[in-house]
Length: 108
Length: 108
DNA sequence: TTTATATACCTTGTAAAACAAGATAGTGAA
DNA sequence: TTCACTATCTTGTTTTACAAGGTATATAAA
Image (cartoon, rainbow over all chains, first blue to last red; front, side, top):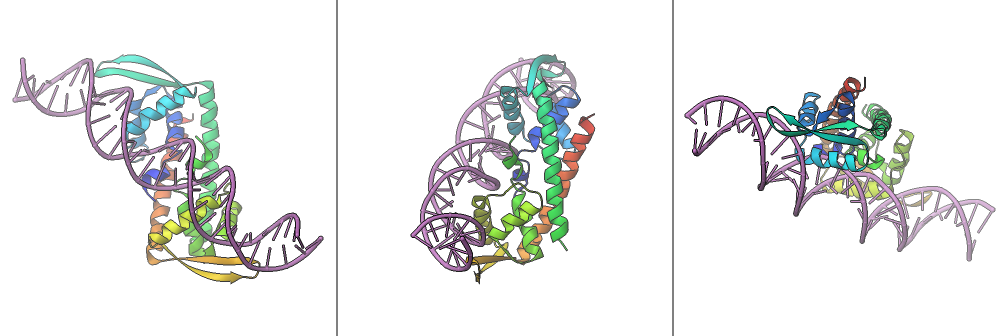
């Protein structure tokens, strides 16, 4: 029952949500997740995930120069990505409901 | 982004909660999870999980006869199991808060 | 110049978990 | 005897998060 197991299938949906708000690059997404209260999410998690989602057609990317370091790879949602975000949100709400029902009913 | 990935690290905590309420056997736990709104959880998931938790000292088990089939293996929480349940509950609340923050902030 | 720091991306290998699919067995009813 | 329900367990597969490392750019201090 480690912390990282509970993140599986969650991080990708959260990244979609972050990208949906405004185009974003990987390094920044890691920081944003931290601000939202997640434990530091490794770049070894984020980059492969973004590449997978691009392969699946959920996001597109553009490289742009930065004033403070190497080029950034900005991601945006495709129509399929937006749809995937909606589905993630629904699945999350369902999970939330079920887990809270178990915890509430069974813990006293 | 499959459904099953999102269950990782969640099911074990829910089983602890179910066992905490009242001693219970694997086959019944699968049904109970269904009642709480989870998609059918495979027995190939539950039994190895219970064995692992017993190996880790979170639960103990007793075999008892059933009037309607083969013997049942009833599980109860140990002190460590109760502690693990509390920790799971806290981790879940933290995750819930973070994910909802991302979805709320980023989805319009 | 050299060094350090922050930025930014990517790769490899590992561990953990859920599940499909099947095996095994007891019970009771048609 | 055949079927359905109950009940446990095993094997092999797939997916995922991460640790640990590598590469490279920009800025500023030493």
